[in-house]
Structures are given as structure tokens and as C-alpha cells.
Length: 427
Ligand code: S3P
Image 1 (cartoon, rainbow, N blue to C red):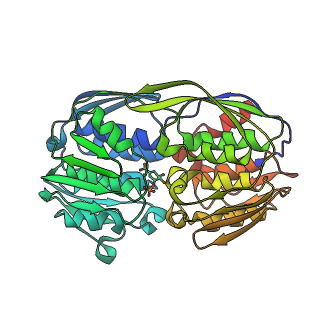
Image 2: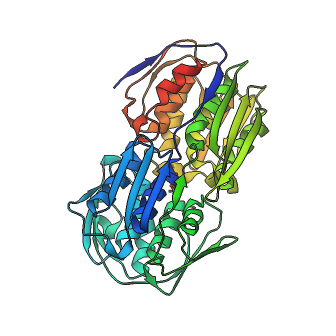
Image 3: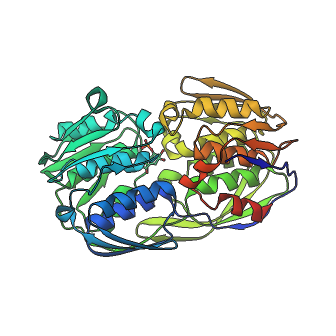
């Protein structure tokens, strides 16, 4: 579905509560289903990706009832999950695919999983390789590097594994297989990636221990259901944080946004760039902190985004690149080669879309050089069927001279179904 966004060019004021965090919503469904007893989830993200996870567990016999953004999950316990009634379709969802491989590897039954054209091109060997070291039997194209995959459930043994990629999905898959493995499973990281799996597993009663960059889990078949509140997704809030930062005179409040330290790289970067932010009403529930973020536009300067910061803002890089087009000087993004294997190659997509709108961006092997400040003109934008590219283009229309026409906005339903309603409210 094509969408034309009128150029706006006036300040934005108001309050938004963005939908629940995608990563936390997936995990709430998984752990609630694998636990014994009832789990209630509040402020669940009712987006296409998380619904793939819901459908996968329903196909394994778990009763999950959804009313608006609340879920009631009647957990069956890990060992009582049933052989799926059908092949599992993970759609566009990388998190469902990677984490579910960790869940399915140790089951007593066999399963087959597949996804859409984009997911079928994304690397699964990063998960399949460590799972095979644990004894898993997973078959598919190029030794199980790509979907579709067939998993022959096996008894697993714990491993001591150092992550070769900075990926929370890989870390989580190994830890979830570790819950079913004999002995200890240890995952070591070189950079801290999002830690929602570790935090939430603790809330469900697993024996999991994190010391610095090392996480250890032991066999735990008795997770206990609990209540989960899902804070607003900072990766969704990022679009409005940047909107407020690039439109002169704006002041937006984002309510109850997740502030887990492994996710707040964007806040560190925008403050360095000259954006004023204030955090109010900070609270903590289930080990996850959240609060209200107030963002005010200021004079923007360029910055370098690299190293440890990258996993703390990986999904926000497209919209941060848009922000950088409005900063004086050259913003350098490096060590972000992971962007090439997201829902699309986001280095190519961001470079093409922003240049098409009138920016000056150079793609590099592992990032981008963004030369600012440029007046964006507007015009056509391709979404590459990637939700974050489509939303970045929509936010660009707030500062373009002419309209922005996005070829297809349907992917936005992956992570932020109410995006255009929220955008309309603050315009
Ligand atoms: C996610 C981890 C990140 C992130 C993705 C969600 C998760 O991917 O980009 O949107 O929920 O664990 P990687 O682990 O591949 O970096």
C-alpha cells in the first residue's frame, strides 16, 4: 500500500505512548508458554512479528487468549509442549525464528519451520552451529544455514560458548536450549547485547546467573508463570524522539518507554548531538526499567557511533541516520556490519532512501558517512519491505520541502500498527 505524506514544517507538540517492546513481548509469550501456571501480559505488542510467536505456541497446544494488548497464557510446561499441528510459519520475524530454534532443538518431537522471502535469506547458521554443538539435529539448505529447517528433537548437553556475533538472538537461543540441556550452559559475549532473556527468565524462576559478559543457565523444567508488564518499545519511540529533535521548536513526551541500559544507546547519542532530553517518572517492574522521555529540538552536531554502542542502538540506526542529515558535519557510523543482515540490507536501504530524498550519505562496508546539514527535498521512497525503513521515510516528511511518497507501508504492522495514528496526533 502506497502512502503520500504531506510536507509539514511546523513544530510538533504532544504526548505519545508507543506500543509494547517487541523483544520483551516475544519473550513473555515464550516463557509464559513454557512455564507452569498462568501468565498475564500487559501492554503486549499486537504486531505481526509477535503474533508469529503466539501462533507457534498455540500450534504446540498452549492456550493463549488476547484481549486488546493483554494476554492470558495457560502455560503447559516445557516438557508438555505438543508436536506442532502444522509447519511453523515465522513470517518476517527473526526473533521468533532464532529463539524458537533454541526451544525446538531439545523437544521430544520433530518440527519444520519456515518464513517469508526476507527471513529465508537471513543467516540461521549463527544459531544452528552452537545448537549442533549441544547435540541438536537441524537440517536445511547449506547445512542448516537458511530456512526452511527441519528440527529432529534431541537430548541436549550444555556447552561453553563465546558468541562470534554481537547478537541477543543467538545468546537467547543458546540459553533457551540450555534450559533443556544436561549440565551447565555458558554464553560469553564480547559486547553486552540486550539482556531481556536473562532478566525475564529470572522472573519466571530459572536459575540463571550473569557475571559481567558471562551468563550461565542450568536445566530448568519448572519455570513458574508470572505477570509481565511490557514497557513501551524504545525502538518505536526512536521515530518520535528523532521527529522532536529535527523539527525546530518541537517538544514531545514519550510515555512509559523501556529504559533498559542495553537499549538506551540512542539517548546517549542524541544528547551528544545536542538534543535536550529529560527523563521523568522512572520505575522498575520485573527487572525492566521504564519512564517518560521528554525531547526538545536543539542545534545538532555530528557524532561518531561505533564499538560498544552499536548493539545498544542497532535497530535505531536508520532513524539516527535521518537525524544525522540535520547535524553540522560528518556523522560516522561504523562496526555496524550487522545492518546488512536485518529485515533488509539497511546500509544500502538507508543510503538509497535518504539520498533519494536529497541527503548526502555514503555507504561503507560496516556503516555510513552522513554529511550534514542538508535540506531534504522529498520525493519517492522505497520501503524495501522493512518496517524501520518505511517509518524513517515517514518521519523525514516532517522536514522535507515537498511530499514524501512511500511505495509500501504495510511492513509497519510488524512492530508499530498504530504508527500513523500517533504521527497524526502530534502533527
Ligand atoms: C532482537 C535482537 C536484535 C535486534 C532485533 C531483536 C531480540 O537482533 O536487532 O530486532 O529480540 O533479541 P540480533 O540479536 O540479531 O542483533
